[in-house]
Length: 485
Picture (cartoon, rainbow, N blue to C red):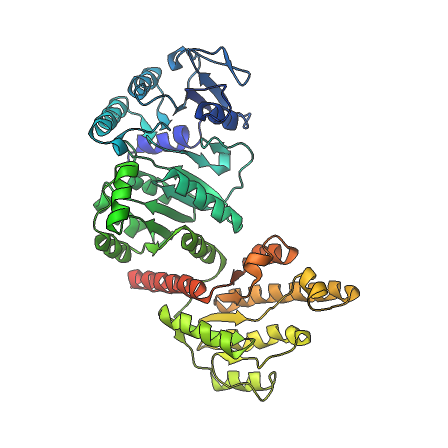
């Protein structure tokens, strides 16, 4: 990326002081209305609505043309009809605007005529030494400076995960899913048809972005695969890249072509390229969010050996099967670990991994933390699955377990201590601990759910899902070790 290109990214696209919304509207629900409304929430930034048929938009003076704005403009948001976009982009060049977001659709995804117009837009930008996102983009955001062209009002949480997506709706879904698990974004970009800036350009920019620790992407097709590979090789040893790649089947490849005009390419080639460059490829948006949460929440496993502590034999067996199907190994307990567990469990426990707690009563759940420590401390174990509550929700304690109200506060306090102790052990021994219980769906908004999220505990109700996430982390750790040798 050239130095002046980097300046356009930083100053004009992601931290503009002034923005023109071309195609601004007073019609509620329209792109021109939502864009202005969303941008006006940040009072530190000047917003200039452009509409030749309105004197004001949302109470702000409107201009007939972008060239009529008397002040410098850093960024243009273009929401006019597709036929008007080339002329509007030329006006932006004439005004000296260096960055733009083209929300308008109806270009390359519509066929040869649309592709011709896209090519024209690219030429206009190159001649004017400007850069634009899109067309057919849903917008972009920089949470650190509270900039969003998605047309959304309200304060955005500031985080460290970047989202790149060649689908606007998928971009929005990934962002919402991440936020739902307590993960905020640094930047997110709906790249659209990439008539000017491409996936590879954003990737190079985010590699240099100190606010971004993990990069995620939804990819339908790459315009410059060789450059992507070169960039990924440099980035993944320092920042994980997690990708959902669509177009792996004939039907999905056709859908990709009609969506953004991208060529999906041979899926096997993408798979090989990702493996060679350390890119973590996942199947869908939910798995992407699970992997990102794990990358931010736990150490990378040193190897693939799993220890399982289960409330019963059946859940332990099912979890072991799921782990083995995902390429994980069920570790062998060290004799010293067996001896420690002998002192804590009844004589009925099987003295092997998975460790069956042999059905402790609800009153004995307090022992779970003590039983967990020997497994975490065992050198033969790299990942621990806990299939027993280490803490209970207040409502469950009173309504389902019959704990007296006066005892609840004491139990909750003890449970909170246990969770924090688990977090300390995770950091001390560098081993992920997976909590397997029904909490994820039932208590996400409860005090317990918030505590688990605050302590970055990984909670799953599906063993195969959890094992798959750990497989990705094991693979990434091995890749990093390989590139360092």
